[in-house]
Image: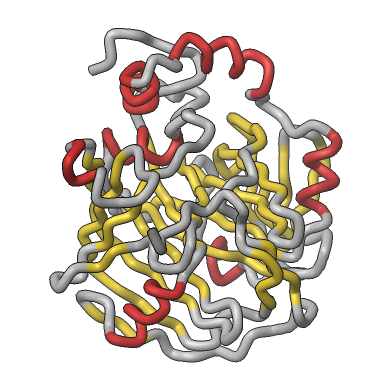
Length: 314
């Protein structure tokens, strides 16, 4: 357990922050940037998106990672504390059709065309056949590092339904997608029983130069943790609860790849040093893999890699 306590962060986040001596700085910073509502510019930001990323814990406590797509405005804010997902203007019913009031949800809004990113999390406040409301617990912006710029090549449309392909470890085609990926999304959760604002589900982004994810013969993924905002939302969650799910997107074909498993944070200096610019490592042990061909209604074209991506060629 962490020896320090916080109104903004739980024990896992505090422990990792304290290890690199940024806890006090983050406490002061968080008093200014962390809110329990959405400011007007973020309300407008979410309303302009045609896709958002969600994290939800299933009935077994397993975090699940999703992308939801829809017409601009499908995510609105009737008031500054209650984002609303319109089920009729999006494909969100596939994800939110079975949620219940009180369920935790993490929301990552990210505009791949300009690297703008905002995260929030909260709990389901209302669920009807037409919409789902989320009550905000925490909301704040995230840095734009490691986000590649992509432009939508087609507007929202209904995706064709295809049967998912299930496996225990990544297939050859899955390995190719992972090896070429410069982006993936990761779901995690923390529930400490205190009903604090930092409890719930989180959805986050990870990026780097293609090849930054190492895959061994057993299908285990090793991901370098690069320098970021030092809040440790994802790693702090995983330090306490190692259950996770990764979401990879084939931006050209619309394929979705979900990898469900457990995570381990590796800080051994010799092992970390084998990975360019890594400060620590995140190792994922898959227990289930699901690939759904053409599941996405949107397609993107790559325009520019992040200038912050470490060069892996040296």
